[in-house]
Image (cartoon, rainbow, N blue to C red):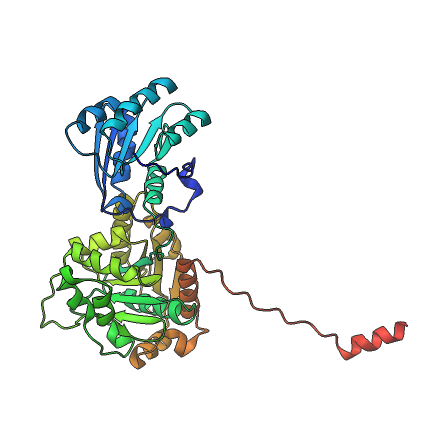
Length: 423
């Protein structure tokens, strides 16, 4: 059993932001539970996106069942055992477990006794952590993630997936502008990955005809590493790089979800922010990308079709991302002349989420930016749409809006004269 003694697990997962919990690596986790409720909670944790790479097996039977199993096979990377026994009985059973447990295995005990003395004894015995039942799935995920989190490793970047409720809602434009702002105004290294292989517009929006990096990377999943990704990135500015799509209908690019996940994992290890432009295509790889992103931004317009699709997307994401924050909804092109629209309030009521950002229709600003290969901030930084995008970028990066320095009010000549007259 592992001899390191980590800090006690948090009492409640609500104390930490679940979106910043590290991804758990490709490890084997076995659990032997006494209570069905504990087994259910652990299995629910295994369905979380942060555990998608780990292999989890959940059994009933507690410590004694685990001892029997591992007399015949090697123990996993993480072993979770539940016990309802007293302190002395627990210590006795652990002595037998230690005889069949690999030294590298990290052991987590789930017990019924909330006793600091027992906790210290277990840690001295080589147990990695002790948790008091009932357990919380996010509490367990955070605990396991912390065991494999290397303090000396570079922080892993956040993947922000932008998707349109339907074609033509402006999802790509918003994704590109947010990525540009994070890189150039918030001074954070950023990569924008265009996943629309046939009709991607990243190259047009940034006036770039660089290498078709994403297609090359997906075509060689076995060779993907940081060196290859660096070669396939197109440098846009000092802080911004692009992973461009072919943007041609003459080339068929097969997208496999595992290959795409590998590409994004390599990219996020090198930059703090990865903006993923997901096309309005419902395929296994697009579903997987949305389910496993750190943040999902749904761009919609105030129309019936967009409302229906947004509702469907929200319902799906709430199911597959139970432990994550709700997707951010951006309502775009609001106030288009002569178009019947669903009011924002009714849109929010139908979807179940109030749009976080409402961007008014501004054909001049957005059209000029698109035609010139510029960002809206370069065309009109004070436009309402540009200001909404600034707030979206700040929300995604956790940056507080910069407060303008207040100007010191100088006393007028008349006020000075009045002051002299009173003396």
